Length: 312
Image 1 (cartoon, helix red, strand yellow):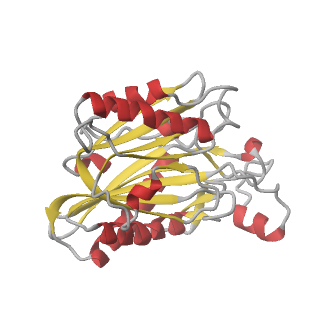
Image 2 (cartoon, helix red, strand yellow):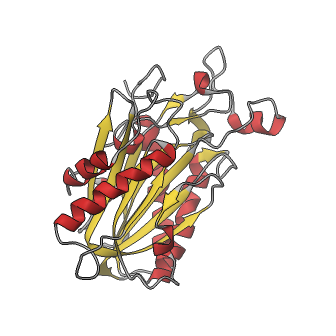
Image 3 (cartoon, rainbow, N blue to C red):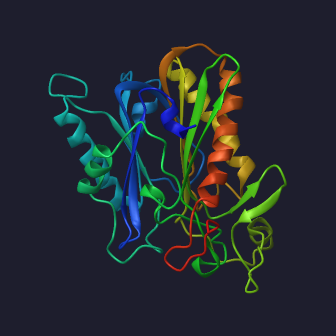
């Protein structure tokens, strides 16, 4: 299993700045992918999101970019557009690559002044491959953390995870998650917290309970979980948006609290292929793939920048 790159036509590349502690991740679909998306968080930063709307005349997109650096990180998408344009990929005769991007806030973790740039985006696109997705504290996950209701001093390291679920028909649904949530990550098989805010004694503080009690810090708009779901089933733009909607359930199963006013949670769904499956079957598989990707994002993240991680 390779994760998101199990889907033929999907390439994934990372660029990481381990001095500045930030980075970006690029998902290329150079032949074009039918795409949809849904936002459920309330602190989202995106560019070209309208391309995902069924009402937009665009039929397909060519790349998705996830980046740290808050709004500064949106610069990375310009490098991806430049990379694709040099390869002759895009719409019209120019050509113009269609790139959707979303950012996470890692400025409280990264070195002052560090953020992904156009050059970093271009480097991530040039590094994109169909090999197994590299997971953990890499790319857009370099500066990702979870469990911040008591501040960064009590947070844990997170990163990127990816997973594939295969239907009996052979149709695949894969997910890639960049987890920078304010809440805790929960293993749905045990209902126990596996990464999140910690008390002074190192035990999990239970972020949901803290939020309900009002005893935590005032949540600031500095968190998000960014998801891409891809399938080799043929979908319309309407169905791609439906898949993004149902895939959000995987986030709800594994992060608590989720979709807060401090999070910019979103899902982008991509369709490349000719396979056939009902949107219900794809939705079940997508929510499972998202949930496992989120778990892997924290389990594969090592200690970095003084923030403890689960990977030894």
